[in-house]
Length: 283
Ligand code: TA6
Image (cartoon, rainbow, N blue to C red; front, side, top):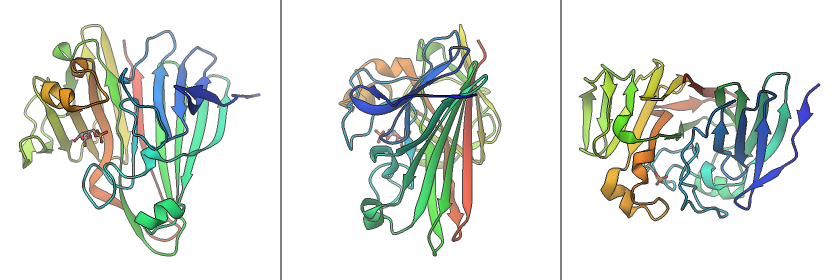
């Protein structure tokens, strides 16, 4: 017998807070289908959320796991990262199971979206928590008569004790586009990527599991169908320029994003796609 959760609020915004019988908890804002908090069973918050983030209708929130759709960054005519992260989604279900908790949110095309992106679609985010793991699935169905093509990303802001001691393993040998240097076809040589300046990289064909390690913390990051991984840290100058993030907070976060950028998803009429990102706390 599962238990349904009542809708909740987060910083005044409509949200759904789910908890598993083992104590794992997550909060998802209806705006953007935006996971804003995840606490594994018996552990601390794992997502970074800026203390100066703006929580208001139509505003992107600095932290958690923003959903980028149907565009990534400025790579197209739409607003930065597309429209999904700033539109209201519908909460379809939020329930506790025997050993987990699950919620599903949905965004469908509307006059607002069709005006800037002339396609019919249903986008669904499924969030499942159990123990020390969170599984996110972003699914898109082309409900129109014409083919459509989109980029997507789960723009995960991972919380760090201190960036200086953080190492991201699993990228060695991958080709990446360096957005800071404006260079394509770079190759990652480090077995353990450490950040000592602004990093904004799109790693291609990044299908291996990644490990984000600190002295007392290790998070395993896995993806399916998201073929690229974006690694971003604004470092000092970019952070100071962000109005919704304290100047020094770049030390407390690293974005490791499951993405489809280099190979956008193409859906024929009636076709569906689903991509997944899983985060598991190792220690
Ligand atoms: O994560 C990669 C990136 O595209 C960076 O270039 C930076 O712009 C970041 O996303 C944050 O974007 P936002 O629109 O949320 O400020």
